[in-house]
Amino acid sequence: MPLSSELTLASSPRAAADARRWVSDVCHRLERPDLVECAELGVSELVANAVLHASAPFRVRVRGTASHPRIEVIDGSTSPPVPPAPLVGDNLDLLLTFGRGLAMVAQCAVAWGATIEADSKIVWFEPAAQMSDEGGAEWVIDSHDQPGPEPINDDAVEVRLLALEVPLYSSLARQYHELRRELRLLSLSHQSDYPLAGDLTSMFANFERQFPATFGDQVRAAETGGLRRVDLTFSMMPEASPIFVTMTEMFDVADAFCRAERLLSLARTPAQRSLQNWLLGELVHQLGGATAQPWSGPSGASASSASQVG
Image 1 (cartoon, rainbow, N blue to C red):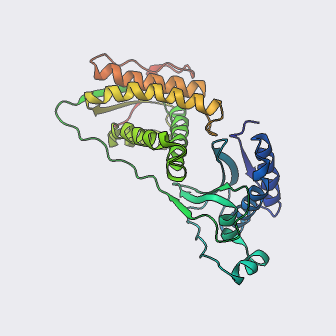
Image 2: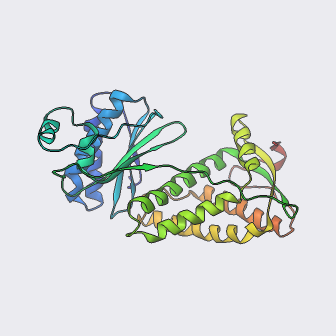
Image 3: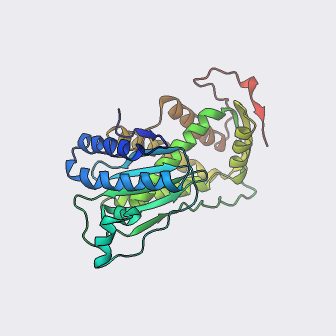
């Protein structure tokens, strides 16, 4: 089982115990037995909190890096958790006896926080080697501000992505979203340890700005309509071409980091990589004046089966 795997939890009292055993195994496989105690305490509190106050499905997974592993508990609620008020003096003793909750997570962590997704919530923490006797780590709010697209003028080029495989693209988009989040969290929590994470986060934001809103609108319409293949048409500025060349290389570097477990995220599958290379290659070629070529990748569906959206 790869380190970046995840565990699906039952909505039952045994969920916390299952999560404790799982994260203990992860810490040992990372050769970080010093983190086991805080990892078990923190994940137990997060899972118990999710089962009591949120909705299924419940999952636990490990992300981050081998040096700074991050344990995440995902539930089906989009309601943000309420971070604990600072605790001092006798209140700490009371906390250790009754209702430990999120304050216990703060004491077990070197960093912790939450991400609210469109259909779920992720509460995460990086386990400490020793539990804090005081209030613990501060709460980090992870928000992904979607960058606005670059303005389009009369120099824009019409681009056509023919026979795009919608389910495969959707899976690639999820993988990209998670990689983007990994870099963002590293830049938030460990900027001094991973200065490149901030630079890469900026690069990814610039990459996203090159895609007009109509691109995402057409993809979402195809997903909603249950289409397997779709033809997309939109306009882009020619100046975006070097960005796509650079990002093609950067995605390969990110895959190598994931496979070497320097990033505890999932690398792209071969099919996802093929689709992304085709997509970025088409953008570069068409912005340079070439004719659109349809996707003819792993699924084997013909270009004639595509539907037009937009």
